[in-house]
Length: 344
Image (cartoon, rainbow, N blue to C red; front, side):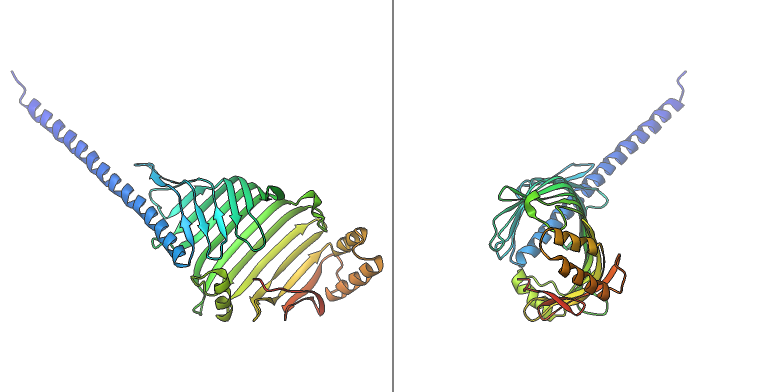
């Protein structure tokens, strides 16, 4: 005798199977649609950024641009990226590979290791940077505006016409975000960077040795960022009240350790103008080293040491020294110590 429940059971199984297959098909369609949407966001963001730079007079090329990884990842490759400024300065990078996660197509992570070439500077040839390890994380908005970028480089060498200039053990920097300045119509751009293990050439004759332990700078640039080349943009930036605010700047180099903070603008001749508070240790060792190098005499070193100690408040180990830049003169306290040239 045939069990009447068997056909019903088979029908139930078939319906469930069809439902499952249909569900998987729908999920596949949605995943495909989302991947293509996310891929289009990356390509649109990059192209919008490129058009923004072209509007400023720059030439931007990516070489061959490919976006792969369907359906689980967004993998980007640029065969020959390069940027040229209106005044002739240029950068040429190595082939770049990068990726973005599906749920955040506006954050690009890229490997920029390799050979970077810079040129077009006044009275200088081409510089080459060789980065053994280098990464870049760029956060873009849909319209192509760069919100902020994070870069990390290890074991980089800078060459000039194949001659070694310096080697850096590690270099890290965060640029951005770009935002409206509070209470004004100006813009603000943050910078936070540090470098460690900087090796200068043996024949550099640097006053404190050819090894710089560390450099760091945390600053905010305030002012309009017009879509023009540097020579045209700087006077506009100055006239609109542009300024550079240094929250902290530190250097450890041989016997000297320096910490500074303050701010600077540009005067009518594009010379730096501003004030900084500094705290310096190791000045006595610096003066002794200058005497050993024959750059100053012992009597001069004694007078300078006494003057700096008086200006710095009497603590020979940690001198607080005000630095000012005004009318093209760099001064330590009331004592002029050098002249300042225009930045361009």
